[in-house]
Amino acid sequence: MSLFKRIFTLGKAESNAVIDKLEDPIKMTEQGIRDMKSDLEKSLKALAEVKAMAIRAKNEIKEQEDRSADYEKKAMMLLQRAESGQIDAVEADRLAGEALTKKTECDSHVERSKAEQIKFDGDVAKLDANVKKIRSKVSSWENELKTLKARVKVASSTKNLNKQMASIDSSDTIAMLERMKDKVNEEEALAEAYGDIANESRSLDDEIDTAIGNSSTASSDKLAELKAKMAAAKG
Image (cartoon, rainbow, N blue to C red):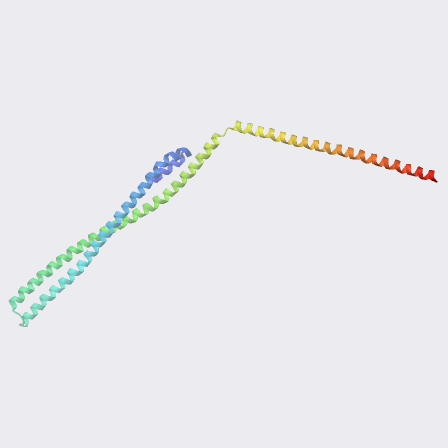
């Protein structure tokens, strides 16, 4: 089982236990990713170096093959000139023999370089596969780490919420609500009482105004009656 599979099995535990157990694995995973990236850099460097050696071997093969062909060509030219009498036959044979020796050395270099190239190409293939594997692992680990961190945040929030809920005393809450109800009832009663007082004051004023109004009417009637009597007496 991989490290991440072992880590994610912890999700079955309670949220507070998950937090405690996941803190260290996160740090371990982050360090593991850093180590992987360091290994990736080393593998890339090794891959570049081996590829460079493979390229040099390939270039050396071409160079030695060209030199081998050139020595063979020169040996043939020496023999041809000896046949035509342009140079001494003995000297031509000696020089041609030396050229063929050089050609043999070049052929040996070619064979050695070909063997090296085959080995280097095999090393390149292995290193390239290793680099791809490490890159894939780093990418996978980084994605799983993001998921892991997100789970830690959710678990932490859940734990804090549960702690808050657990710390609430239901009996205290009910008592507080009852006190609030009593206060509201008291305020409503006071409001109704002030309303009754206001209505009573308004009714008293109406009675006074009515009484004053009736007295004024009675006085006016008597005054009119008095004026009528006076007018009749004069007549």
